[in-house]
Structure formats: structure tokens, C-alpha cells
Length: 316
Image 1 (cartoon, rainbow, N blue to C red):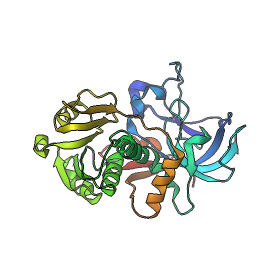
Image 2: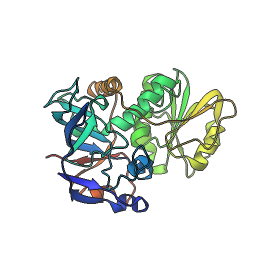
Image 3: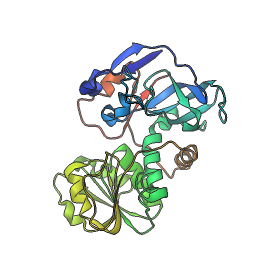
Image 4: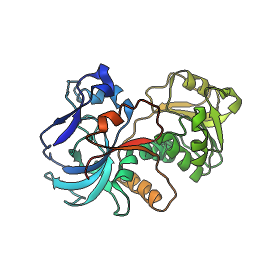
């Protein structure tokens, strides 16, 4: 099968190579999925799991990519809940070969059915951005889904400062937070303003030209940037509020609140909730560039800044 592999952490996405690899076998509780579309997060090149296994042993050359939509072609021993020929989408395991390939072996529990009226490219754009927002919002109120509810403890009437509001995660956070009654202030560069507002932000802060401190107090900060922006944002959080980071351990803490760094987890039920919102129009995807697997390396090494999720269309 065709697959993109990486071998050099220092080279990042520039070190990607398109090669031929054997099709993966299905272990116990696995399924094999023929991938039709794959999503990619550029920061994967900084994740330890891209380069080592759970025992911290080198696993290169590794196949990156974790978001997928495709069709089940084989079932491993003991696998239940899915069937051969079924359309699925989901989130591949962090420490195993990923989805920038024609086939992937993945634990069945990490997949959900993809309705026939949802395109594969849309399905592949949802898992990380949607689950991050959903799990945060619903369980603690932080990341788009997982972040906002699971970790952020968001409640109706509260205010959310959503950094990167025109990006793939930021637009999910904005839409879900608005759906549940929050007031959303988006941030980004000047050129991101209209897109952030189009996706539901009620205010926008240009981080290059506006004073972040002028936002005033907020109940929750959803951070996809880190560094100095995160430190300044921590000072805006009201008593009892929350700072949520999806860029690693937080470097700053609110004076009288929580600071949480968040790693998204796959959840079949939550994936189903997300895709239903797409189907009924409550949630819009934020897809930027779509490229074929043959052209993926160029697409994942853009020469100009892009907003939105890059999707690799694997099958014709």
C-alpha cells in the first residue's frame, strides 16, 4: 500500500516520504479500514508518540496522521460492534501507525459509524477538532467538545476566550460554546476576523494589534497557542474559572481558578453526537485544503499560512 512515513523528528513535515508499505494485519479487537480521507494536525511532528512506542522505543519509520474516514475491510479476532463494508470515522491510536496511508489497523472502539449522507472528507475533519471541543465543553467545560464540557465545566451565560478562533479546533469550540449559551470572544490575526465571526464569535481580538487585557474578565480560556499569550490570558480568568491548554502542560495558572492541559480521547458515542450535529446543520466543518495522497507532502508543507483543516483524499 502507499503510505507517508517520517524518520527524522528534526525535519518535521519536510522529512515526509511517500513509500510502499505492507498492508497492516488486524490484531485482537482491531479492524482494518480502507482509508478514503485522512486529517492531519501539524503539531503531530512534536508528539513523542509519533516517534516512539509506549515503552519509549524508537518506532520509525512511522506513519503519521490520526483522523480518518473510510470503510471496514477486515475484523480482528474478538472484534464486535462493526462489520465488513461499514462506513466509519474516528481517531487512530497515538502510538501506532496512522492514517496517511491506504489502510490502517485500528482498535474498533476508536471508530463510529459514518452516515451515508456525510462525505468522507467531512468525516475525516471531525475527530480531533470535534472531540476536543465536545469533551472539554461537556465533561469539564474546556476543549471544543471534550475540552469545553469535560474539562472546562462551561455553563450557559459564561464567557469563553477562544484562541485560534478561525482554526479547525477554534471554530468547533466557538460553535459548541454558542450552542450551549456561552458568550464567545475569538482571537487570531487580523485576517481571521471575519471567519471567526462567521463561525459564531461575538467579539474578535486581533492579537497583533489589539490589547488582550482590554477583553476584561472571562470564565474560560481555551488555548491553542501557549507561551506569552497563555500567560497573559491566565490573568483574565475570573475566580473559579478555567484555563484549558491543548498545547501541553500549562505554563501559567489563574490566580483563583484551574489550569488544565488536555489530550483528546476517542469516544464512539461522542463521535456520533458530533456527526449528527453536522447532519442537522448545527455544526459546520472548517476544511481548508484537500489534496490526494500523491500530493500530500506538498499540501502538508504549505508555503503560505492556511486556516482550516487540511484533508488528504486517499481513495478516488
